[in-house]
Length: 158
Image (cartoon, rainbow, N blue to C red; front, side):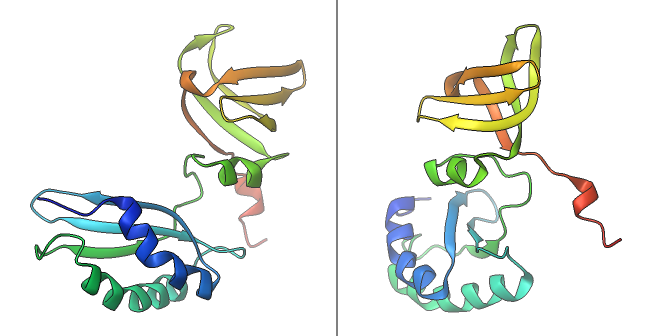
């Protein structure tokens, strides 16, 4: 199935997102028996079902006009990126600066493939983590996944 570029889709939706105070975190299109366009969104206060529903309604008509699949049917999903979403953009890294992150490497470094430490620097090519033992600089090309660490104790209602 032929589809328009993610950049074209992002450009068509950006003004609506800006007006609603929503950040478009990622857009992905999955092909197959049931093609789906998923727009991942975030806000300063997080995302709930009402936010997803409101944004879905707001972008439905503009997407019909854009016709991202050139007339082929698809399902539109609007979703939160999730607590454990990978850090991808400069903005993602900036938002996590000074926070605990989890890093999984493709291959062991210093005998380890997993690090949990404070993110203290990002330069586009490397991240610097601060552990009790000191700082570690890791090249992004060696990182399989990096995401903000989830502190489950802060998620409880107690």
